[in-house]
Amino acid sequence: MGKTKYIFSVGELKRQDNSLCYRKEGTYASPNHIPIEQIRELYLMNEVSINTKLLDYLSRMGIVVHFFNYYGHYSGTFYPKEYLISGKLKINQAIAYTDPRRYQIAKAIVNGIAINMREVLYHYYRHDKKMLKDFLDYCQSVESLLEKQNHIKHILRVEGSLWARFYETFKHFLKEDFIMSKRVKRPPDNPINALISFGNSMLYTKTITMIYHTHLDQSISYLHEPSESRFSLSLDLSEVFKPIIVYKTIFELVNNKKILLAKHFDKKLNYCLLNEQGKQIFIKAFEERLAKTFKHPVLNRNVSLETAIKLDGYKLIKYLMEDKPFEPFQLKV
Image (cartoon, rainbow, N blue to C red; front, side):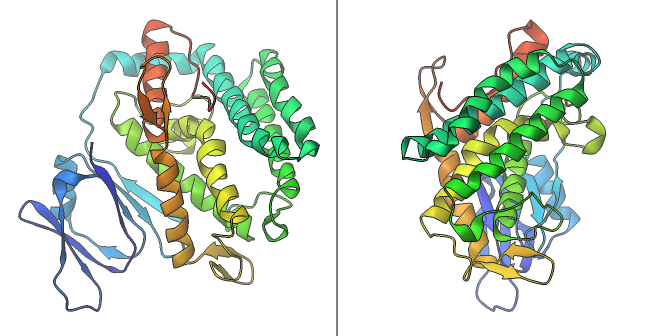
């Protein structure tokens, strides 16, 4: 499988023979040729001109393209024609949305979020942040709280409470500049909200790419309503990875002073966004975290966190087709 290619500058991207050709705007230097065989997905992080000839080529090569605007907001995804299609799986996916399996999948996701949140914050608890004990205990109670819920709204209420309590803990281990009073998304109003919004968008797009390489239909989801987004299944499957990929990246960047309030953000009257340098620092750390490996207990080999996202897709397929229990990824396996 190829790699991820990021383009940060304004410019033009086109097809030239059997490779990609990128020219940065305002330069007279030779364009940069990018071998197509080495690419799995493209991130266009600025205003990049493309044409239909290029899109047709990218579609035939199965390359997913994610578009972000100048401000770092996710704009959308160019989704190539699907090459892994299973009518039987699609039918089972749709039926599961209408029967009690929807609740089982949604509960497994929310409990997976709690388990991974606990694992991330236990690190700080072990380093003298004993005030986190109440939240760690709450995370352990989420599974029993979910057992009583048989309506998606009630499951979502448990999830909402979990995230709210998680944000509350930030004051115990983050630097004062990055503590937040509440989650604000559109637009983010302070540095920590800016980091979370950007990080969640990056994880969501990564999940889209990984699920593209399975037989799953991205539009049929279980925790999020399918009507919310065409790629709502990616919203579902990315949730359990947020604590261990997005938030661990943020905590380490902030506490190690790699991201600085005065240097890496653009602050306007009503919003706050990562600047160009801030986005590049985040993406570098984000990619390094995705590449981290662990010994998979079933496959008995080292697997990256990025691959673990796709493996969760396979687990969901096993549940839908063979009724094998769906247990999303846990940091401590």
